[in-house]
Structure formats: C-alpha cells, structure tokens
Image 1 (cartoon, rainbow, N blue to C red):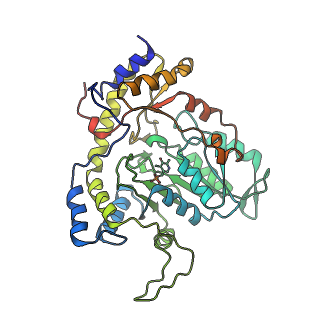
Image 2 (image 1 turned 45 degrees about the vertical axis):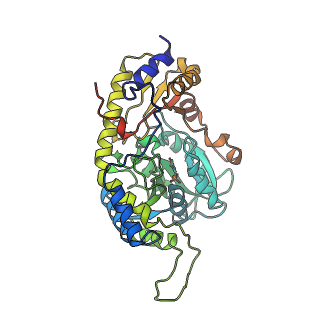
Image 3 (image 1 turned 180 degrees about the vertical axis):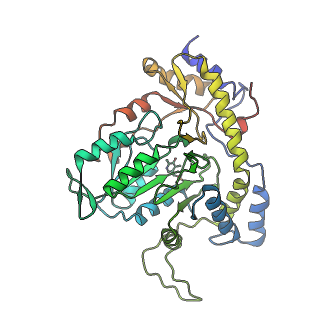
Length: 390
Ligand SMILES: *Cc1c(COP(=O)(O)O)cnc(C)c1O
C-alpha cells in the first residue's frame, strides 16, 4: 500500500466517516456558552466592559498560574503589547523563530522593529537553545548593559519563543541565554494553553507572554487573546495601555500616553468563561485523540507521529506527523490524498524569511526549520474526535 493510503487509513482511526469533512480544529461548545452570551445580550453588557471580562481574566490567571491576565482583542494584539512593554522600539531587532505563524513577525514589525530569525530544533519544533547560544557568541555584543548585533549595529531588544502546535520549547537554557545577554524573553503561547514545561504552564517564564482564542485554537472567544505575566507592574500597565491609557476620572478624558483599543468585548469574554469551565475536559479529549493517533501510526514505516518532549506536557493543539527524510518528496501526495478523502491536512507555515516583507531580515542558518517545513503535516485534532479509541 502507498504511504498516502496508509496515512489516510491511520487518520481514519479518529476520523472514521468517509462521507464527512474533518477540519483541522473546530470549536466545541458543550457548556454554558449560550447561557452566558445570552446574558450579555439580555442585559446589554456586550461591549468593552463587563463582569465576564473580569471573570475570564481571573480564570486565565488561575489556570496558567500567572499573577495577572489581561483579555484583549486577539493574540496578535497581545503580542504587540508584550513587545511594547518589553521595551522594543523603532529599529530594534527582535529574535524569533522562522518557523512560526506570521503574527509573531508581524507584531515585531508593528513596533517598527526588525524580526531576526532563529532556527528550531527537532526535539521541540521551537527555538534551539544550543544553536542560539553559539550564534549569539559570534554576533552579539553587550554595550552599556544592552545587547547589540555587531553586524548591523542594532539593539537586540527581545526574544520571542513560540510553543509550536502546543509542544513546549526547552525554556531553562533559553532563559539562561536571555539572562546572560540581557534580552527580555516573551513567550508566544498562542497555541499552548494547557501545555506545561516541567509542570509549569507555558507563558510563565517570559517577562510577559501572549495567548490566542481564535476560532481554531484550543478554546475560543470568537476572536480574542490575552496577555499573561507574573510582573504586577507590567500587568497593570498592560491593562492600562490596552484600554486607551485613560486616567480614571468621573468625567474627564485624559490620556497620558499612546494607548490602544485592544479590549476584549464582554460578549466574547462570556464565551471565554464558558470555554474555560470545560477546558480540562477538552484537554483530556485532545490527549485521547493524540494517543489514538500515536497507536495508529506506530506500525507505519516512513512516517512518525510527533509526540510531546520528555520534559513537558503538550496540549496537542494540532497533531502532526513527520515524514522520514526518504519520504519527504511524498509530502504533497499525502496532503492531496488526505484532503481528497475529506480529511483536512496542511503543511507547516512557509518560513518567515520566504515571505516578501521579511526576505531581507537578518537570520542565522535555518536548516532545521527548513527540514521541518519540508516534512511536517498537521492532521485533524478537534476534541470532538475523541471517544473512538480502539
Ligand atoms: C494564532 C496565533 C497567533 C495570533 O493569534 P490571533 O488571535 O489569530 O491574532 C500568534 N502566534 C501564533 C503562533 C499563533 O498560532
């Protein structure tokens, strides 16, 4: 049997109905979603303030074990604010993986800063600490306590790491590098709610980190995101700057800095509260789907189910398979066969330096990211696929 047919057969263990279309990730509304959103409409508390925003923020802080969570319009807006609060300014460089969703690089560009692309490691799909350390040894220089790129003369003001498809990156050595070079760390945890690095929820090691609740993520608020941090001052500032930076006053509109209208509306937060109530159930269903795939792919030669790293716990947001090097040229055939069978699959994102707006950005050798891009395939991962274990 061809590799493509074997892959289709393995995915059928979670996606059994040949008449159905299986998307990569669809929302599951099994709790109080209707009740809470109806409450918003009935009381007319649909917009930028309301009790659901406060409750959602508290639930997020509790779940992630962070001191403060600030709900915002989407994950990209969250990242934008993280960068501003990390001190990123016009013409700074920000290190970020080449293998990421475009929002990571875009948020850097919104600050007038320049993305500087770093390579990933196979073990996590995220930033490779060893390679980054070697690279910084050759290009970085500390001047007046700040890190500079010797080749461009620009300041390196932040590192964003991203927990790809829910798999946690190796944070300890990365934090060590950031301390050594005085580079503030930001975690783009858009894909990793429910993922842990050594028992600590992702997003805790960055000075400030971001989450996303877009429709295809593990939980959704329709559109939405959050900033999480363990720094009370940054948390306060994040709330202030995302709500137009208005000084509290009974009637006067006084703003003392450029603020943003990045608030999450109450009606979206209502959806978020209901989703948070079901999150642990959704996560265990997703784990069941992943376990099912793991078994289904175990006997197939030339393709491997990508499992969580030994040091962490993944939410398995989007399950993925990696073709062996010998089978890399089969990638498009596998994508075609699965999509033809009503099973949505897709390759990794096109690497950031291949996009026209980022083609001239500084970067290190990206051979591992290139290799992952050539062989990775995402497969359907919705929690509602669970329950069909065999
Ligand atoms: C989804 C996502 C974002 C952006 O989130 P939005 O809510 O869609 O703006 C940022 N980074 C990564 C890695 C993502 O997957």
